[in-house]
Amino acid sequence: MNASINTPATPTANPSRWDLDRLVAEIVRRHTEAPLRMTGSFVFDADTATVFEQVTDPARIAEWFGLVKGGSFDHAGSCNPGTLGAGTRRVCHTRGMGDLDETFFYYDAPYACVCRVKNAMMPVVDHAAVMVLEPIGPSRTRFTWQQYYNLKGVMMRFVFPSMLRSMMNRGLATLTQQLGGEPSEMVAV
Image (cartoon, rainbow, N blue to C red; front, side):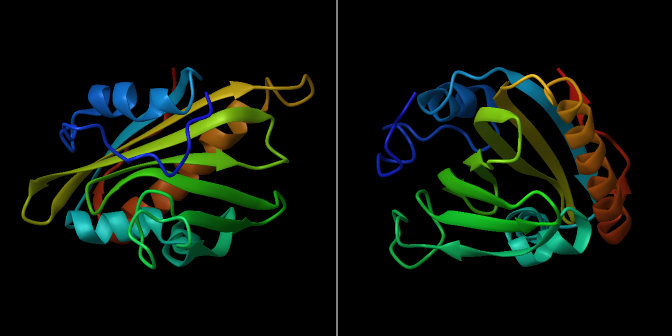
């Protein structure tokens, strides 16, 4: 599916921030038909704004996710010119895998975002990542992360999903140590 990133980020009725099924049906499915490949739900001892910054700002991601060494935002395509919003492009520089080129299709800080992910070195296409954060106490947040993609090629298609899940789980374990919370893992679907 090729929907323009300049289309409104939400349909006429905004999906509930924490209604993952509606976010997938109304946002993800406008951009990809790829299946859900992995998911995880994590509880952190931090407010939603803190967790959201940790999982969306490339400089903060580099502090807990060993693959990422930094990055930047380009707000030229944002629905809110000059600021983060649907249409903002995020580039995460990685160690050994080139750049992750990501464009937000949905952005509702500090509660949810959906982005397209492109990287020439990964054996995946039609990749979308969904992040939903739900406050479950004054300084406690449930973070749900889902990855939708289709596999391409032959060489890495069987190894890559487990490698990606392993890297994500190491990073999320580090983030749990930094923020406090309950250990959990991304799992294959």
